[in-house]
Length: 407
Image 1 (cartoon, rainbow, N blue to C red):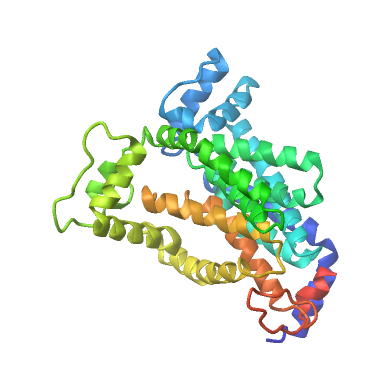
Image 2 (image 1 turned 135 degrees about the vertical axis):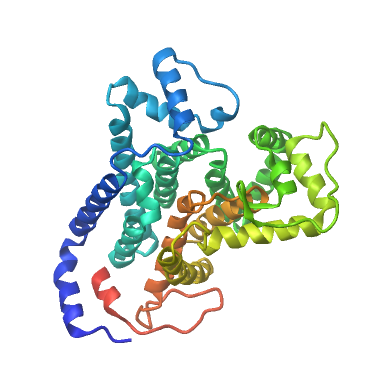
């Protein structure tokens, strides 16, 4: 499809200022959501985070139990409370981290696009303009910080291509922070570990690969204990019995066709899930497929028709493009494994647990989808000699405006 000349001319005139325009759009989005929600937005779980944060700020008390699985966010809030800046300070801090995350999306995508600024600008634009990402910056919830840490993890992950010790140290720091932000935050580090294992597996020297496998075997008991710790305060069997696809929402639920075989008392959290799956495979399969649809489809029951249509028109094609991008050999393979791993691991967790009524669980992994989709989209308009190969080596496409913008 040929781009009309007036649009083409306007794009070329504005292109030298694209980073300033992206920054202006980011500021505009923050102001719009601040106004929409009337400043810092107190939502469902905000009370317990703020109570925890006050305990840390005033007494240095770290509450044990379920809230400890979200410890980074109350700690983040407590810093602003100690400074006397209150809720506006918390939101300002979240916006500052989000600004760094936006830059990380731009820089990381540009590295993967071999210096192409067009793809980088589109990825940053998607991160800025998608409303269900930026709106969380004014929420007093963990989502804003976790979304930003996922984006920062991507940016720092791509920087390790340089091999500099500072890049590796920064990556480990950001992965650790992501793991402390939410109970499922470990998926970011796990995705990075999978990318590392894949890189070792493909090396001609197999000794590091064998050493890594041996290390995993030795660490298996510790990893199993950590999984049980994370699941200990989540009552998954209750949601399974109720057939919930969305937490505490019964209108969309899977109904039992036969009595369920429940785990015996005293079974550990992770073992309970395994027991339930082995003894109720068809029912659990129906639950998981239903949760998969609810999670990725964007067709949440409380959303307006316009909201659902937007998701179908934008996200569904983005999923397909991202899947194609994950298979394209010309994109640095560890980054492909990392981005696909972040999305797929989060999806697997939702399928085994339960989704929420909004997209607070999907929003953190949408940057991974957008980056892969935009890299694939940018590649499809490349010149014949410059198109990145797929795993099947499909033929190239013609050069388009995006390539001129990337120069």
